[in-house]
Length: 365
Ligand SMILES: [Zn+2]
Image (tube, rainbow, N blue to C red):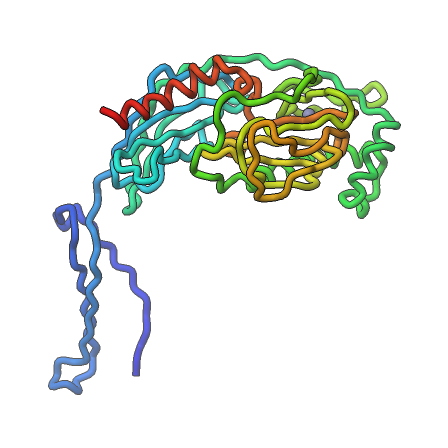
């Protein structure tokens, strides 16, 4: 008869003075039976294991690291070869790093990170790495954080606006009793939250390669109607009913204007996305993604590769939109950042291209 039980055995390499490297762990079990000449039944198993109590090493390579509040930062860093996962923490938000080459034998990695628009004071920034045995390392690195003041904006909610937009959300509000303005508030609060979580989830497994190149495009011949991180106050019949931050840039051109992909990438979402209406999301690799919302028409398919400038749809006013415009967002690992930086070739040169060029120098010593 076989008796089964589970038992946990802790092996402390330090206490046993084990050296680093391969060990054989042998487990012997003897029972109380006396059938075999008094020795009892006996069994043993051997497990091959590795003693590793040394944390992976990690160090920043790029200097002159600057980032604006609400903006993007890039760090080139190097880890020891035992590291299996690494990246940057900005307070408690983790941004994964990506190997520069497939072989990654020199441990060089890059990591895009965001300084959230609502960060409190100077955030705690540090590099982090983990090895196979679960040992971890932290290392702080220098990054100059430039403060930014965001603007205030007033939005008037009118009955005619509600009459026009609420039918689009009938699937969401059909079961709830309430006035039009109560429905609006549910959409502006709960649904917005849900949509942002869905976006985060959508881009949680990005392409590990850089798919983009050069300066990013802005909607052609368009005027800026709302800026990134505008603090919006919503008014209805003269009283303030809500406040929200605007996590993208609103660009207006002609009605049903053609919308081009801001850079090369892969389509990872097409369809309705709550308050954002008809939306396309592109993965640009290594955690960078762009989003195009309130479209009247989508002309690309899921998993389609696109090049910079390829038409992905037409502007419109689907979702929570006052009029025909494009809501454009850029995200770094699911955190919204200011797209203005990515439209600026000087910013890209100083903050991205120069750092990536360091890696090419490393290739040819
Ligand atoms: Zn917008």
